[in-house]
Image (cartoon, rainbow, N blue to C red):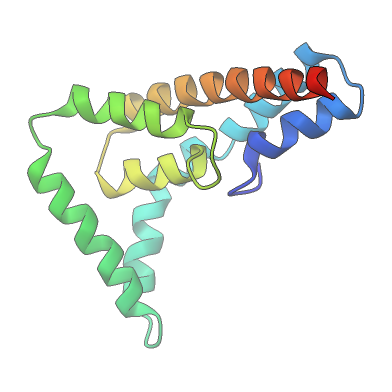
Length: 141
């Protein structure tokens, strides 16, 4: 559940500790998805609040302006946005997981019922990719 690391770090650790694959996969995916339905509705509010702070407000306003520009451009491309969100979350690299996907969904003003399935599918795929990479690395060693 920790941002940045998420299941990308937890799957290799769980497998290296000898836990069964199915248990590691299910716990990591579930733990990664727990904050998503909470983050999407509240991330925008947190950004709005942060924009009013004296010393860091500029950074929050900059993030919000990026989101506003993207929303203006993407009003008619919701399927492409959801596919891009899915692929972004599925990429097994630091900073591309469910937390960042939820922030992107909030910035793009995506509805929860559209964003959560895209993020969930991305987390499932990221878990499979990381598992394959972990077992492949273990076989090489």
